[in-house]
Length: 405
Image 1 (cartoon, rainbow, N blue to C red):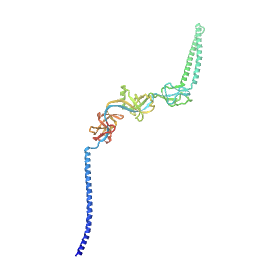
Image 2 (image 1 turned 45 degrees about the vertical axis):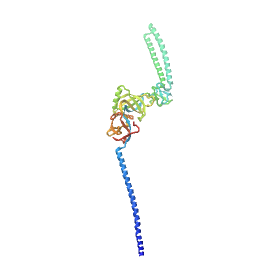
Image 3 (image 1 turned 135 degrees about the vertical axis):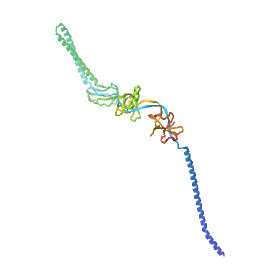
Image 4 (image 1 turned 30 degrees about the horizontal axis):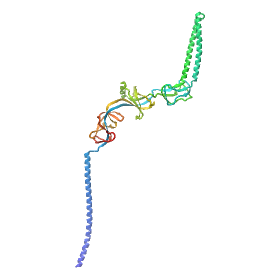
């Protein structure tokens, strides 16, 4: 009986051993399950808190409205603005002279430097005067001979007068002698003209400047024979002080100019370089042409410049700005504030509540960086000059940056 009991106990132990191993595995699985459930729970809580936070931030942003746009502004102010007419023109000399010789001869000396400024009467060149000095001496000799013959004829005339009175000679002989005296007087006048002509030719040997101006390039070298019929001449002199500029304006603008000219006003003119950025000289309008070019619809005007610094050069291309009037007490804003769209020109105005308002405006004169506004703005209103690319009507703005006041 003990043996059976011992055998039974051993059998139960063998049967219980697998059950204990299965129980341990079950406990491990339950532990992982609780761990996963805990992680999932924490993740859900985190997602819930995050969603709640994002919703709160979104609600706060929605309540605060869209973010403000940083802009630069400038106030509209009252002031004067000039009104110019612009035209294309070229510089023209008042006088241009090609210096030529009046006589034929050899060029002995050139008394100028190319590019030199000369005054009227300055010596430019010297032609060999010896042939004309010989002609002068010959004419003077003829005059002396004919004067001697005239003196002798006058003595004979006095004798014939006495003899004719005494009846020794006929009246005809006396009249013939008187005619001889008058003939010699005519010869002496001819001799004197020969002398004067020879002296004039000697004067022409010294070529002088006919006007004050700038010398061009020399066209003839020393030693050459020059002639009065030469086409090129010796040199060209151009008057540059003062100097003129011929320019054109549209015919529609002509009435504004004529109105002020007829009123006795002197309109200021400014010459700019080809780019139109650099001012070269300042002058005044002199006159208006008497006809309009029908092919271009423009008319020519002439402005005068003192040009004492020789900044203007003949045939130079320039841009001319003619000051027609100065418009007083206009609303002025920076030209960069003006925007253009399908509905016309407009500006962004910053209102007191720091929002942007789209304002249609009528633009008057634009001069440089300023523009005048004929309607649509009042003095003191702030217009946006920078940052308009991000603006829309009603947008909140933050005034900052250059140009703000």
